[in-house]
Length: 322
Image 1 (tube, one colour):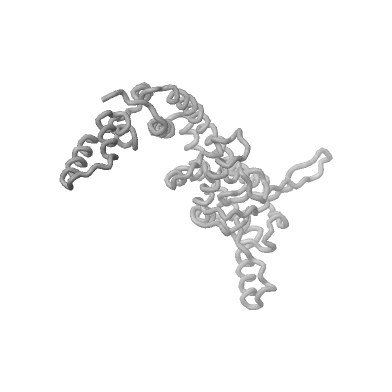
Image 2 (tube, rainbow, N blue to C red):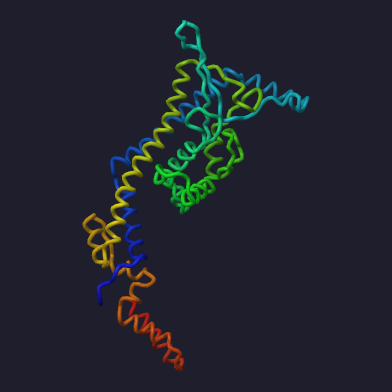
C-alpha cells in the first residue's frame, strides 16, 4: 500500500481525537474548574437556606398563609403573594464619612441565568455560568459549551451566535431578558425550581429591598462570587486547550502524510489505530490504494455484466476493505 496522503477529513479526525484527549486530561486547570463547580453547589445549598431564613423573617409563613386564605375568599384584590427566585437584599450597618448609616443593597438571582454583577436583568455572564455549570450535559447534546471561552476576545459573530443559541435551546432558556422570568424549561427549569420562595408585594423585586444583616449580605456575596469564579476557572482551562489546539492545527496542516500525524499523536501519548482511522474515512482507502481506486473506476464503467459477475465483483471489493 502506498503512503497515505493527508486530506482535510483525515486531519479533522486526528485533530478531534487529540483534542478530545486534551479535554479529558487530568490537568491542574481542569481540576480547579471541577473544584469550582463543586464549590458552587455547596454555596447554592448554604445561600439558598440562608435566603429562606431571611425571607421567612421578612414575610412570616403565617402571614403568607393568611394572605393566601384572603385571596381564595376575596380574589384578585388580595393577590399579593408570589413565588420568586431573585431578591434585593439590603443592610444598614455601614457608615459614611460623616458617620451616617448607609444602605448597601444588591440584586441576587438564584436562577441558572442570574446576573453576576447585581443587575436584575439577564446577561452574557449568566449564560457563561450556565454553560460552564452544565458543560458535560451540553457536550452530550452535541452542543459547544466552551464557545464563550473560545471566543472570549472576539466580538459577536455568526459562528459564536450559532453555538450560543444551540446551548441556550438545549438548556431550555426562554430568551427573556428579565432575571425572574419563570418561562424556562428543561434543565433551566429543573435548576431554578428549588430556589423559589414566597414573597409579599409586587413581583418587581427592585421595589422591595429585603432587610438582612451585614454578615448575611456577605454570605450572599460569597455565593455570587463562587458563580463568577466558576466562569473564570472554565475560561482559564479552555484557554490552555485552545492554545494547544492552535499549535496542533498548524502541525497537522503542514504534514503531507498520515504517518506524520500518527507519529505526532504517539509522541503526545495518544494511541491512534491507523487502519481504523482509514477504515472510517470516506475516501482514504478508495483514493490512495491503487487496487481499490482501480476497482472503483472499473465499477463506474457502463459495461454489461451478468448477475453472478456483479455479485463476485462486489464481494471482492468488500474483501479488499477488510
